[in-house]
Structure formats: structure tokens, C-alpha cells
Image (cartoon, rainbow, N blue to C red; front, side, top):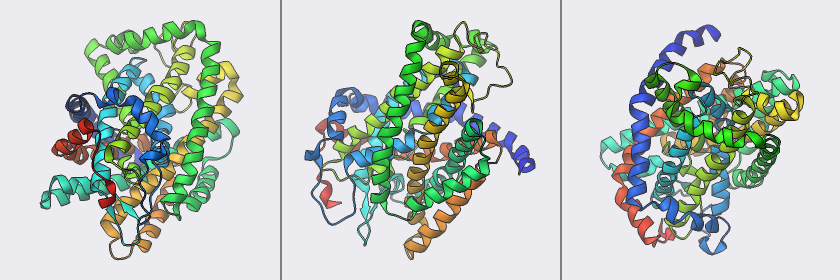
Length: 472
């Protein structure tokens, strides 16, 4: 396994670098700007409405003819997918490679991504289908074929479906279990494969159920895991409060002068800061990637707009709250004057998998810091595995489930659990690069469809939604 990984690792890295540096940055920024302007900055105009809709029962559709979940449950499922290793390990990797300034570019991507994810949720509701057994089938594969009705549309939808199965159902599970295994091993000394076996058992209990079982788990775990991490982060930041102004100053300064902290020429350094911010920002909030629309398509709402504004809150929670708190903890403890990374050089014992543990450990103590991050990351990654498995399942059904959906789900779930186990002991960097590659593949057809269906989204955003979803 290690030998094979060392062979393909350089190829995957080069391929991802090309996509991230020359295609992905422009697509994500472009679609975010496009919808921000076209919707008259719906992420600003309707920000308060989004928060109100999360808990507002009046937006609930009164349908009994299909299996759906509440708007809050859909958000919890989406946030469970968004808030994962990207917030802890991904943010740490972005800071190590691109400097503290990478966080600024994550914020930019997230702000624009709020408009992007609004469009994804609206289109997911508009184009969803109801199967014979009452199950909702919705997501980019369905709105891609709405955007492009020819054979080209079927090809793009099929390409996306394969990419999402690999990215979320298979490679994504490897990333999550890899990070869980590494952090729990650091904290408790438990071998990673043992952790992987335990994960399989826990996940199997959820995989065999429908979306209601998933939603009942995520609506309880998502708020709990976020609250625990937020409280722990605030304790650290309170202890390091004198360094908070310097921390924010570094984020803004090194967003435009990254060579001062990570070395190299200005061009190379700024490229590293931006691309790391974009790449890890995408993996963190998933706006434009096409994953979370699968969750939002399940919501029982009266109009697509109502779920669109709720979807925006998911990006805000993911990036501007959870990821930002983690970044502030890392920078205020590791990059300030008394931190081990103040000079910009990275000691050998520091890696993206343990940077957050070291940061929290500098205040909580080495052991408790490692335990705290391990527990938080377990919950983050576990719920992400659950949500991502569901996203992949929707696409497996789209491709292979027309004749025998039960058999399709069973085979898909078994393969997914195998990848969860494999992820606990394969090469860490290769796992992340394979995940990035599959994410990139998802973005391409999804963004093409988003551009093509602009009129539907703009009509929803400017009219604040008038289409009754009962007819879908």
C-alpha cells in the first residue's frame, strides 16, 4: 500500500496543483461573484431571514406523500458534512503551507460561497424528484440534466455522480477516518485500525436506515459538537486574549505579504496563500462542490428560497465560526512571539494532523489538549462520514438503483465501510490529495449547471420564492 501510494502521489499532487491554481480558483470565485451580483448579495440581504427560517415552523410544507425532513434537520445534515476535518486538520494544513493569511482567503471564499450555496439549495428543491416509495431524490445530478437536456447533460450528470460517490462515499470517508485514527492514537494510544473497526460498526447502524434516521442523529450531534468546540476555543482565546489583536493583524498582513512568514518570492508566496485558502476553504464549506444540495433537497419547505437562505447559514457556521475559532487558536498560540512557528520555520514534529492538538495543548496541557481535539474531531468527522455517505448513496441510486435500489444501497454501503477502514492506516498526504482530486471533479459539472440555471435562482432570490414545492 505504501509503495503504491509513493508512486501515484506525485502525479496526484501535480494534477491537483494545476486544477487548483489555474481552474478551480477562477471557477469558485467566479460563480460566487456571479451569484452575489445577480442576487443583489442575497447573503447580506437575507442573512437574518436565514437564521429565522431555521427554527420557523411556518415555512414547513404540509405534505404527507413523501419522506422528508425539517429545514433544521436538513441544515444539521449539511453542517455535519461541512464541519469536519477541513475545519481542524484542513485549516491547520492551509496555515502551515500558506501562512496565517490563508485564513483571509478562506473568509473571502466563504462570503462568496454563501451566494453559491444559496443557488445550489434552491436548484436542489426546484429539480428534486419523488420515488415510488416516497423517497426524495435530489441534488446536482438532477439539476444538471435540467440545465442540459441533451446527451451532454446526461454525461455531465453521470460524471458528477461518479465523482461524488468517490469523493464523499469513498475517498471522503478515508480522509475522515484517517484523521480520526491519527488524533485518537495521539491522544489515547489506540491503534488506528482498531478505531477504524469501531467506526464501521457505528456507521453501519446509521447507513442501513433512511434519511429520517440520519437526520435524527445529525440534529442532535451537530449542535452538541459545535458547542463543545466553541466553548473550548473561547477558553483558549480568553487565556491568550493579549495576542488576539496581533493574531488578526497577521491574518490580514500575511494575506498580502505571505513571503514574510512562509519565505520564497512574493509571487510564489501569494499564490500559496490564495490557493491554500481556496482549496481548503472549498473542502471546509463545500460551497460550489455540489455535496450539500443533497441534504437541502430533503427539506420540507414551502418555497426553494426558504431553504436557500438556510443553506447560507451553514457556510457561515462552518467558516466564520468554527473554522475561524480554530484558526485563531492556532495562530495566537503557535505564531505569536512566544510560539514555535513565530519565525516561519516549521519544526519536524509539527504537522497538520497534530497542529491543533499542540495549539490547544499549549493552554490545556499537552495531554488534555490532545484529548480535547481528538474528541471534537471524532464527532466532526463521524457526522461528516454519515452525511457524505448519504450524499454518495443518492448518486449511487441515480446511476445504478433504478431496477433494484435495495441491492444498490447494500453494495454501496459495504464498499463505503471498507474505505472507512482502509483510511485509518494509509498514507496521510495521499488520502488528502485523492480527496482534493475528487472534490475538483465534482466542482466542474456543478458550476457549469449553476451558470446555466441562473434565471431560476435569480427569480427565487429577488422574489423571495413563490413556487410551492408540493408539486415536485
